[in-house]
Length: 143
Image (cartoon, rainbow, N blue to C red; front, side, top):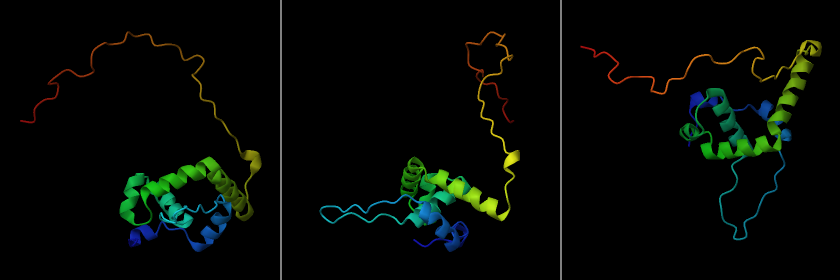
């Protein structure tokens, strides 16, 4: 399939790919005993698909229509690389690159991950309804 011009805006440049490729997990090429099966989709195509989904917010299966990569392949590779820790390595490398170019003021960084209830939030004081929220024929007809 030919990638349309609109989708080409989302493709990874050669310079960026040279930075990303060494961070990818090394995978041995499995050889099928009968010599059949399709080869593995190139990592760059899968990465183009992953970045397209992450940037546009489309569903994985909608990726099939773009011609960039199969949605199921991109999703499987995304899960594989997430388990391997690739995206954490990519984030760290991007932070280091940004620090070299612009500089990060590490003294002003903070992390807050508290996910608890408010200690003085109180409890619900009202009784709960046991019926559905809407009654039948509640909406007024248009005419």
